[in-house]
Image (cartoon, helix red, strand yellow):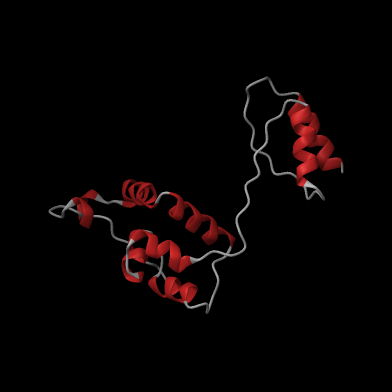
Length: 137
């Protein structure tokens, strides 16, 4: 509990309205912890990613084929196929990414376009053709 005590001490020393993201040590009852923090005036949010995710449903929600889904979201096409066919499962990070895609696929695509679009290589292409994902193996 020394880690939890240090965390609580540092949280209580913050100025009102200051935001802090902290990783909390393993606790037995997250509900009790959030209630105790709330009693001190500390707002909490628990970020957790489901252990299971329906990749095919997320892809179908976008209306894209496996190949286009992989291309649009910078994923490896074989990986998408393996997830959908149950040969492999997305790890925690991939499940978090897929959850974000499911939440707002167009926003994710736009962010990727702004982040990875290379204007020098995209000259003469229509805007929707400019997002290209080349998976690295």
